[in-house]
Image 1: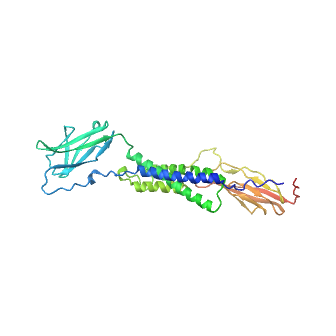
Image 2 (image 1 turned 135 degrees about the vertical axis):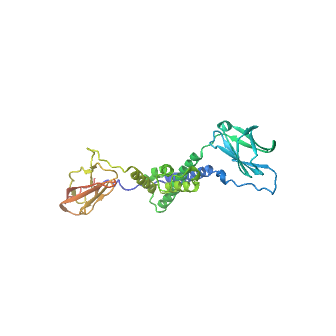
Image 3 (image 1 turned 120 degrees about the vertical axis):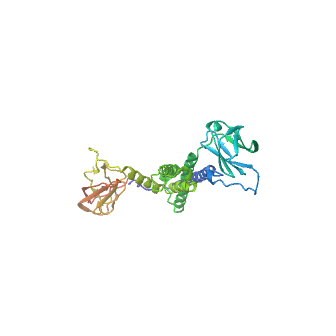
Length: 361
C-alpha cells in the first residue's frame, strides 16, 4: 500500500509542550529581573542640576552633602560638588588634610577637582571646608569596588530587554497555537532559540542607534534615556523580524552594495526536464536553481494539471494527478531576495497519462 504523506505536520507532544511553557515563563521572569536589577535605584544627574540645599536667612557657612556621595575605583568622574550654605569666594577645600584648588560656583555650591590617585583604591576621602583659617564642616566620600560602566549597564539592559520582549512574543505565539491545536513538533527549536534571537537583534540595533546610523540618534551617553533604549530593545525582541529588516535597510543605505564582479553565478534554473505523471499515482518533482540570493520564490504559468501543485518556497511539484493531461509546456519562474530582485524563467513540458494503480500487498 502507498506510504503515508511524510509532509503531514506532527503535533508536539505534551512533554515538550510543558517544557516550553516552563522554559519561556522562567526566561521571561529572569530577563525581567535582570533589567530591573540593572536599573539604577538613584540615577545620576548632571552636577549643574543638583538642587541647592535649603538655607536659612543669614545662616553661617555649613557643609550639607557631597555629590556624588560615592565613587567606584577607577571612576572617570573628574570632580565632585560640595553642597551647603554660606559659601564665599574665600571658602577653601581640603581633601584628607591637603589643600585643594576649588571653584566657587555660588553660595551653595563649590566644585573641587579629583585626581586619578583619589580613586585608585578602595577607601574614603575626607573633604573639609574652611574659611579664614577655621574649619566649618566636613564630609566623607566613599571609594567602593569597581562597578560596570554606565555604557555597559545600558547595553546589558537593552540586551536583556530584547530577550524579555522576545519571550513575551514567544509566550503569546505558544498560547495561540496551543489554543488552536496547531502546535507542531518542528517548532520546538524555534521557541528554544527565540530569547537569544531577541537579545541578538536588540544588541545590533543598540549599536546602530549609539553609532548614530539612524536619523536623530547617536546622542551622548548622558542624554540617552534608559526608558527609550530599553523600549527599543524590548520592541526589537518582540518584533525581531521587523527589526532585522530595518537593520538590513540601514546596512544597504550605508554601504549601497553592488556586486559587479565578473564570473559571478547569476540566477538560473538548472532543471532541464520533468518526469511525466500517471493519474492516481503520487507525483513529486523538485525544481533546482543556482546562483541568486536566498530565499527563492517559485511560480508557474499556466496552472499545473489537476491534482498537482507547486510549493512556492521549496520549488517542489507534488500531488496526485486526477485527470489525463496532454503534454503541455509550462513556464516556471524563480525570483530571488536581492534588492533589486533577480528573476529567470524556463519552459518545461509535462504530461499526465492514464495508468492502473498498483495493487497493494
